[in-house]
Image (cartoon, rainbow, N blue to C red; front, side, top):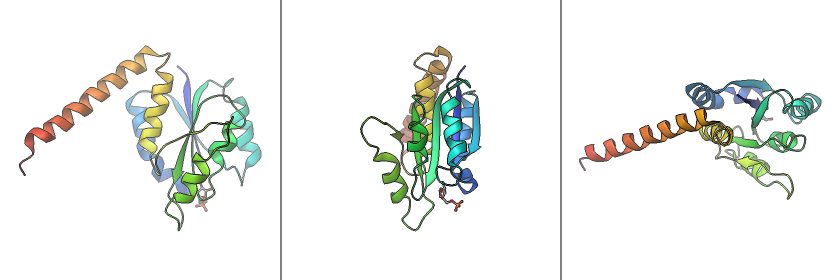
Length: 160
Ligand code: RP5
């Protein structure tokens, strides 16, 4: 099974990635996490992205805040799909990171999830791997069914 690479720009992003790791573990998807910054360790970030495909990764998740160039910098060095998570780590409440991550120029896509949307980043990564992996697809289907049942149960118990 292909691995998911989860790259964060700083260890201060780690707590926001909790739901991402939890979701990947729940789906039994192997992942590696690293701290590489587009600005503070540009060579290490580039080297990781350049070798990601040959190292067994199928998709990358990049989490960064402020002037968040990490997802774009990784995407520039691989044709693996890159999912960007804008992190709310600044006085601008993550809007700076959202725009820095989502506003990629043509020819260089990054699939950007919501600010701090690390659970959806994991699910989107799983859905990408599930295109060719029936086992993950089946787990995603079960998860969707459970989610639907939970909401309908809440609806049936609603008393207002
Ligand atoms: C970004 O700057 C990181 O991704 C983090 O969200 C933000 C602040 O980093 P620290 O100053 O906390 O290391 O590069």
